[in-house]
Length: 73
Image 1 (cartoon, helix red, strand yellow):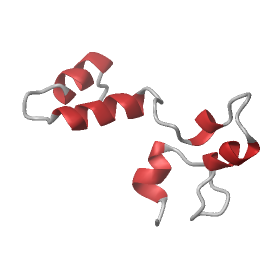
Image 2 (cartoon, one colour; image 1 turned 180 degrees about the vertical axis):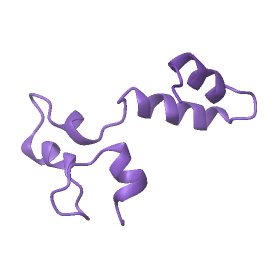
Image 3 (cartoon, one colour; image 1 turned 90 degrees about the horizontal axis):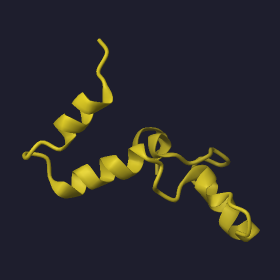
Image 4 (tube, helix red, strand yellow; image 1 turned 135 degrees about the horizontal axis):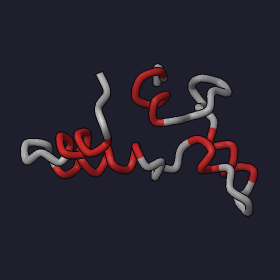
């Protein structure tokens, strides 16, 4: 079953879904959180660039998917 983007956003913005949940889903789907490669920007110190890796999973690159469903920490 194919669902287009308009249908997804219509459901997410339903009055029964809290604003903070809608904000989280919007930011997660638009890669707006500082996870993974977002730490690997020019000018960032090496210490900051290393934040792209999960400290609990030893070298696994962080992502919203990893944080929400794969990481044991």
